[in-house]
Image 1 (tube, rainbow, N blue to C red):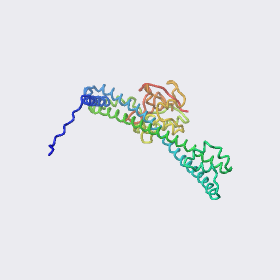
Image 2 (cartoon, helix red, strand yellow):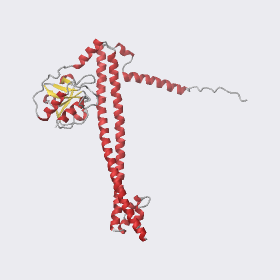
Image 3 (cartoon, rainbow, N blue to C red):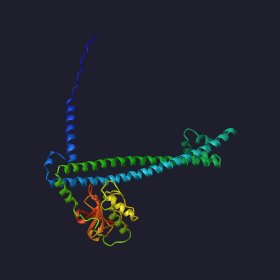
Image 4 (cartoon, one colour):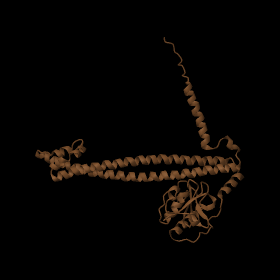
Length: 342
């Protein structure tokens, strides 16, 4: 009888062990960097917590605008893809109809004992080959030749449409992947900010949030006189006061910063692009001393925040998660530029 031997346990090679250790250390370091909430942050002062929370929320807003841009591209690619698929279906129907007409000619000629070489070629397993021998069509009857040319034309257009659809599908998937990445970034930064806030006492947290609020002017603020489309945009923004900040939202129940300005001008009959970094190029640039109600005012070096100017040095904007749509001073944030929609 063969003796049963306990199988030897395979030990990790030195290189494998080093790789595993490196991976563990990298994962731990990445988690700490991502959260920004290492052990050292247990000893942060309220002022330091505020600075880090502000930074996380700014990073979240920048990621929100990138998410908005990627989602906008995905929506457009999806609409274009649907249109191309419909077009391909229609062209397939026309191609089949042309081939059926050729088949009818072939059947008639077969019964009479003759079939044109052009028809034989067009109905072969590789009908595209006849395109290289168009001279055959000239030897067929005029109606037959027209049908043969029609089949070829329909095939070329169908291949083109299918190629365009494939490109749109690739663009859609790339935009969806980018949007998902930016969405995760937003969620991670906001979660990191919340974890920092949770370390504060209730009193400290209330003071921090009050410091973030800046100008507390609200619904009782009075807009400077204005008219036309700008007046309608400003009126819409006033009606949105108090509604929650919802990242990626364009109303009517919640907004992010560029979602609010887009919705306000849409109510005035003007279509703005979706993101801060595209809205700044919508319309005519104006300087800070030229601001008029309805203008778009942008902030921070990355043009990551926008508000709607209402006059008297103030804007209406959607500040950040947890802070509803409100009035603020233009001086509260670093001015990056302004634009006046057409």
